[in-house]
Image (cartoon, rainbow, N blue to C red; front, side):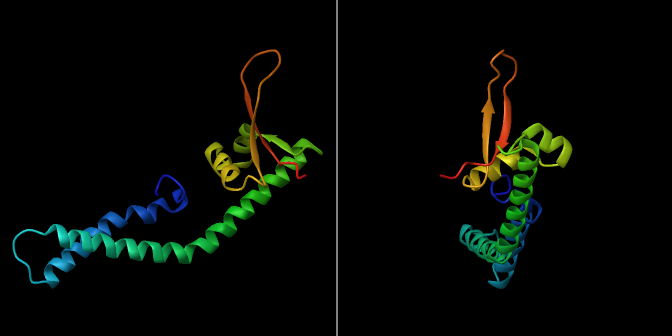
Length: 139
């Protein structure tokens, strides 16, 4: 999750392992156990932390979606300005001139294909291919 769909909150997600360890120790002490931490106590701690994490994500998701949609609208505006009526902008220019990372643009195009698409352009005279962000044409 830290490196995929929740990359934007990876720092918070990284704390889950530490929190599961703390929860396991609380369960251990709370049960008055002696000796080693049991597999059952560790599994219960992980379930508790996952429940907390998913509850946390439900709270955050509305704001995360609103931020993503704002970025999508910004990218669409940039593409319209750069591409005239066609609505296209080179991805390298989005990163260089506007601060949008290549992977971020590609991920948003995957998540919102009805609003954005990434197209690979091959030049007729050879050379490197270019990746272009386009606004899909609606039928």
